[in-house]
Amino acid sequence: MKLLITRTMPQSVLDRARTRFDVTHRDLHTPMDAAELRTALRDYDAVLPTLGDLFKADVFADVPKPRAQILANFGVGYNHIDVAAARAAGLSVTNTPGAVTDATADIALMLILMTARRAGEGERLLRAGAWTGWHPTQMLGMHVSGRTVGIIGMGRIGKAIAHRCHYGFGMKVVYHNRSEVDAGLPASQLPLDQVLKADIVVLAVPGGAATHHLISAPQLAQMRPEALLINIARGDVVDEAALVAALQSGQIAGAGLDVYEFEPHVSPALMAMENVTLLPHLGTAALEVRQDMGRMAVDNLFAHLDGQPLPNPV
Image (tube, rainbow, N blue to C red; front, top):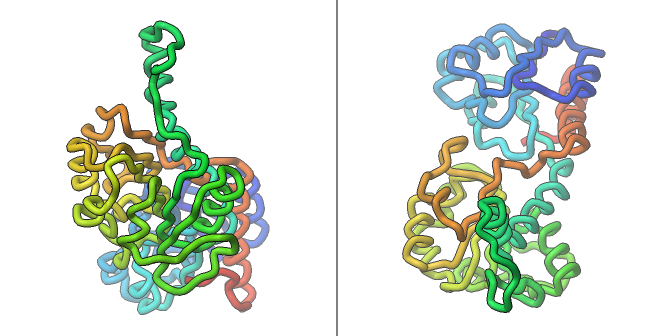
């Protein structure tokens, strides 16, 4: 069977896929364009897509009888795929949960610490040659230990963030989740408006229509003026224009972002602010993690090939 791998991958992932598939590897760092998306459905039995490969309803409408039978997504987030349209066209869709949990939670903690302690601002100051030496009131930030963290989305990643915050920094954990869930540690599940009152609010929800602009002007207005917003979920979970306005007006104190609403475009207003930490979507950027993600995607492809239940259907 012919498999298209849509982006540059670790060599071990390619080697494993080639043991059972005739693999075409699109060795590029950019998402597929409109023509490539349609060709993928027409000319291949299976596709291993990545973030940015926009398999939306219009693509399936243009290829009503695709040759492809499965989209084995490389990543836990799959809001770039219209799953309903894929299923209607006869394709299965899978993802790679679990493999990304710890790495993404680590990035959340990195953003919390960098933003609270003004690390990015401090490094820029030093590199610019503007640091004049230590003094008692230099770059005073937020002391993280003992603070209240509010986690929105208590899935695998949310729980891993809560564990790090509670056991690592003695933080009080409150959280909001669309269903009742046990956090696995001392924590309180609360309505969204109460979680937004935390010192640090972390977004760990899945992407998609249900969470689009979950945090917009009304929610930002409920946050405290000294609070920080951290987003390691999907960029469009936050109304970026509303976030810029909240930061510029001092409605909230700062933000730490690894994802962006119009990624890879980042708002110039955000880049101009010293109280914002910006990372280039580093959530899973560790070789071991990307290898594990690839292995899980290929496991789903192998199960499909063998007619077995898919390990990670969505």
